Amino acid sequence: MGSESTAWLPEGVSTLAPEVDAIFKFVNLVSVILFAGVVLAIIYFAYRYRRKHPNERPLPIKESKLLEAAWIVIPLILVLVTFTWGFRVYMRLNVAPPDSYVINVEGRQWSWLYKYPNGATSAELHVPADRPVRLRMISTDVIHSFFVPAFRIKQDVLPNRYSYVWFQATKPGTYDYFCTEYCGTQHSGMIGKITVHTPEDFQEWLQNAGIPADMPPAEAGKLIFQQQGCQACHAVEASGGPAIGPSLFGLFGKTEQLQDGSSVPVDENYLRESILEPQAKVVAGYPPIMPASYAALPEDQITALVEYIKTLQ
Ligand code: CUA
Image 1: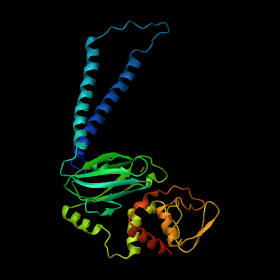
Image 2: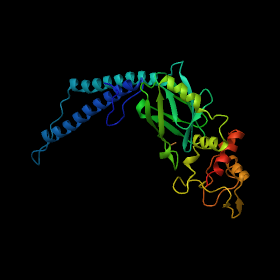
Image 3: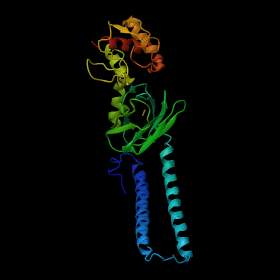
């Protein structure tokens, strides 16, 4: 009983994956045996006790104490084994080692943002191998769910309350993660890759992950745009891309038609207002669904975003 890949799950690459797989296989095996037993018994009895003559009446049933005891005791043992075993693995999965490396995770419609202890942020998750990592997760809107099949972990991400999950990756590489709680239009787009680095590579990645102070604003803006997940709703190229929000390509300098029938010239202050207060001037034809949470971005990041949007021509 290992954690090799199966028809259901990819190869397990966390310390607890073999334990999760073992109990998963046990429950599956018991279920298959019981299912086969029940089906075979139905077929056999249907044949053995079929009515042979039109006037045949069934004989009274003689009870068997042994048989009755068996069908009470055996399932009881199976259920108790599953419970105690499952509970032990559940506790191991839920109690992170005290020396875990903590990464903050923010889920929102429809992207993820990761914040590291040194202040760096990223749109995809990067973790060191061979070290317990604990995710402290919060949602800024609806319920999302963080699922990493290769690590055998899944945890709901809630608004207004932290939820946690931890793992210790055993093998460097990239692994898929998914949002597994239907959270709206782009739910299926809330997927991504976790990069597991060797501990040395991780330190190096972390040093370069922040936005360098000397980066030109338009370039920094592109990074922030990706980190904030803006590309989930806004296209940045002439054709293609999502159409949930207005396309940002060629936006600067043109005149935007608003929902209330008026129009507004797209200048720097209009871009700024639309980031900080998205409902102030809603573009005609688009639902007012952009969250107001970007108002919390620091001033230099907002300026960088405005600069980046201006370059999309
Ligand atoms: Cu977030 Cu589904």
